[in-house]
Amino acid sequence: MSPAEYERIRILRVNGLHASAAALEKKLGDKFMKYIKHSVAGIIVFPASRKFTHEDVALALRARLGGETISAGFVDFIGTSPVCYGRSESLNLDSDPGDTAELLATWGLVTQAASPLPI
Image 1: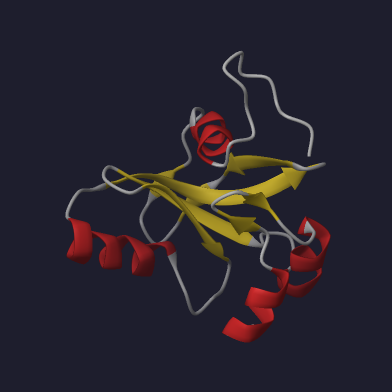
Image 2: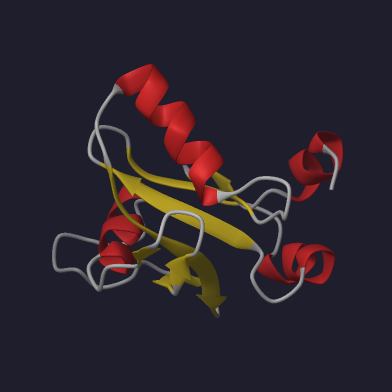
């Protein structure tokens, strides 16, 4: 997928979700978003691609910010809620059970009571 195509249908931005998860899923298949959790940068979500691995992102972050990659996997959606799961083969790291809650908080999709906000 070209950067221009991805930009047209990207689903995340600092302030929330855009376009539809279904549009990305149709373009990229079952595993359409990847993520890594970095000790300095937090959770970074990026498009799934065979040419763009978890390791590529981890190396770039380490070179720029230092720190370490803590966990990695994929992001899928149940309805409009993101869910972190799976593992990164290139980093040999699993997703962490707390990553979904951290991603929800990072995207501003939970309140202080930790209940999802309507989208």
